[in-house]
Amino acid sequence: MIHIPRAEYTRRRKALMAQMEPNSIAILPAAAVAIRNRDVEHVYRQDSDFQYLSGFPEPEAVIVLMPGRQHGEYVLFCRERNAERELWDGLRAGTEGAIRDFGADDAFPITDIDDILPGLIEGRDRVYSAMGSNAEFDRHLMEWINVIRSKAHLGAQPPNEFVALDHLLHDMRLYKSAAEVKVMREAARISCAAHVKAMQASRAGLHEFSLEAELDYEFRKGGAKMPAYGSIVAAGRNSCILHYQQNDAVLKDGDLVLIDAGCEIDCYASDITRTWPVNGRFSPEQKAIYEIVLASQEAAFAEIAPDKHWNQAHEATVQVITAGLVKLGLLQGDVDELIASEAYKSFYMHRAGHWLGMDVHDVGEYKVGGEWRVLEVGMALTVEPGIYISPDNPNVAKKWRGIGVRIEDDVVVTKQGCEILTGGVPKTVAEIEALMAAAR
Ligand code: GLY
Ligand code: MN
Ligand code: MN
Image (tube, rainbow, N blue to C red; front, side, top):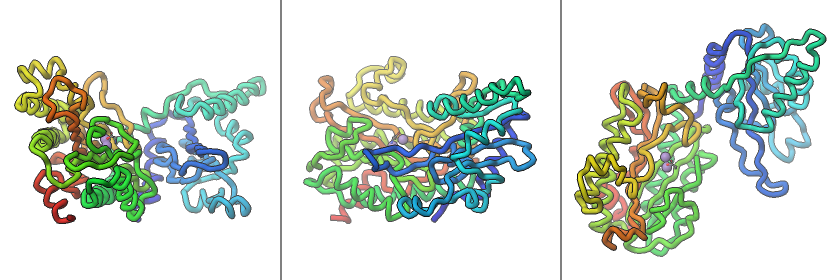
């Protein structure tokens, strides 16, 4: 299995610590286990920041980073080995495994954290943490601080500054390393295979969930533990619901089906959308809309390169889509004026993309100092223009109503422009029709 090598986690911790102010400490909790009902749990997914710095896959753990600490800069609190619990729930690294397999300099049982952590914080001036994202952990942190404060009369020195860790950490996560791109390519490759499978399986009379099953099968067969987000399988008028999740309608002859789905490999997401005719042949109206969306995506790719700013790709999609809608008579007026008045938003109401990484809508600022961020090598993003003609839109001829098309690919900025990670699934009308005809 392709994964992030251990050495990379060490490199990341060092890079973060190098950016922390002198005499500071960073503290991050693992994701909590989410209960589905009674004693049944949701599939565990590690917190992305925690995973990024440790690769440690277990709940009930806390990372502590103390730059310059003589007895080791990286301390991990985690669950102890426990034969009874491991019999029921699976193996645990334990404190020895945390050191041996995950590079911790020091490891302590999580049950001892209240006794040990205040002593590690004491004397440090600043505490970095993800304030505001985990209320329970924030409360614990204040309790540990208050333990130190209560001993001030004995000479204990509580920290005076609390700093949001996100700013440093999320900027690091925005720039993907070679190892990260390799994992993202693998997630993309599996997701492409899944979309191809779903295209080949598409038949009138099946349900949306039948195609979702094809996706899930390919994801798991490829080694993905889970989809990166709830798969959207939206046929007919459902394709106009942007985050449709019901996935239980019947696929009808003559309708399009829009699938937005991607898997996750080693906590890195892929995010692909393709739209195709259930019966394998685009109608003239479906094709006309599809070609505009495809052209707008091509125009966006041309605007993704170092020194171009974040919004240029979006602007390119707005230009092509608005001009295309005017040409088809779905919008009337001057293209520039329709763009200025945002008239296109009745058909194209979302942005052309988002950062992509460990989170499908990944971390990282889109603006810096009030200006759109300039793209740099290693940044990963999606390019996903769409046109959605509401089934209830009284302003357009009936033949257009209920057509929803989105085309989404994942790219990484390179020196020359960008690398498309998700090119392995057909996209032109001819390619899609040929693939589907061959599967009949
Ligand atoms: N799948 C969610 C999105 O495309 O942003
Ligand atoms: Mn998507
Ligand atoms: Mn997306």
